[in-house]
Image (tube, rainbow, N blue to C red; front, side):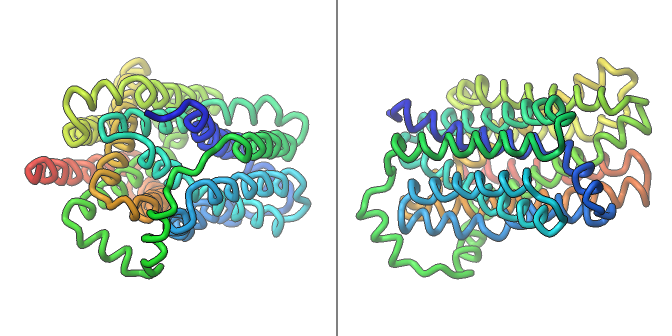
Length: 387
């Protein structure tokens, strides 16, 4: 049984990272433009965060297998504190890029928090505990933009200073309260493994892990594709204002928090992770495909709920299955590869969505995402067949 103190710290580690990300999300374009950034540079600022996550998540994961979760989590919290501080004090674009890249490297620790939970929980509780981390995602993403909006009149950098202070407080708390989850023997065995590209290839050659990693990429790609073009669809098709779009983002965040915090654990106990994954994928197929065809706003909100439900049960279910099919000394490395696949989806999804929205048509990002998710649904059926 997991002690409450470590769970609280892990929850707040993820929560504060997402609050910081969310605080900066609505402010980033304005802050960058005030420092003379072009629209391309604004886009590159957004990409730099996910790119750093993509590059560093396998490194964090393998290092946490070798040297323990605790030192890596503490280092990440220190990095978040520094990244937010530099962002808040930046006076030129170079510092702004540096801040986002440091924050991206620090944010690459998220899979290690999943590995920590896998270390200290039994298989029967794992999906529920990982669902709580997912709830921290949803809650942080919900509160972050609201906090950023409230504090923005005081300057674009001030909200980042608050995020830095929160990360610093969590660092102090974790330093005194967070125990190590891996035994010295497990770490010693992991240190015998070499850090190499073979870790990637071995994971994808594993029939069970390979399917799960591809599914994670597709789910993240589809959701990020939707997220990037959400405001454009609202404005051009449904005539919604920026404020109304913000309310819908908050609505999505609340739904994700409720699904991952309250529903996932109960659902997994009834039907298991694999069937949950199939159900979540099917929900996203319908949600994404129907999104640009809603007859009215209440119907639109119901369709959005399908996407939030599907995403909310998919991510913890996939993470739980990945940990179940990984060796004890491979948890961090596999979770790191998984987070890299998610980061790759967050890099490529918005590019695809933006391109097809302008080049093909308003509805095209959502229709194509629905079709891609239909292929993912077939993969979940194959996963069920393998048992």
